[in-house]
Length: 115
Length: 114
Image (cartoon, rainbow over the protein chains, first blue to last red):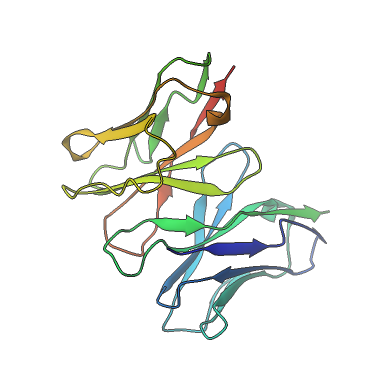
């Protein structure tokens, strides 16, 4: 099955700086890589996702890059703001060989943006 | 409701008791997931339901855990003979049922086993 590793576990940046979170996956057949943001007391919410037929996707201040050869993908947040402070999770499909829709999540990164 | 609803939001129980956690998915969503989030940890997959197909139970940690989804809508996660290590936030999510698509999460049930 798929294994997803996420780094760093915590990240502190100054407001306005950029933040980068990286994930690696094990199944070379995986083809979908979402990122979720979890605010305190709430469930995770999808913020951006990328499919394996593209190498980069941007949505305003956030972007995701994918390196299929190296089996890693990264979340980039530019011009960070205090409201970006949250826990971020990457994920990959639990199995590319079956029809299951489950996602395997990374361990999470706690991002703190200091004003 | 517009989102995934979970109840109760908090549950405190004694070791050895059984608990039931409920999830109301978004109307029309055919896929439903249960995840567990221990303090400061990631999201651990428990079980996945898709339409009338047999559920993917590969993430259930022991035979004390079970889940049902009645009528293709509401789901109940049952933990029998609870242990202290079962203390965690239990998150439910639903999706439209197409592979590789957005999951909508509820706010979770915080379970505390004393």
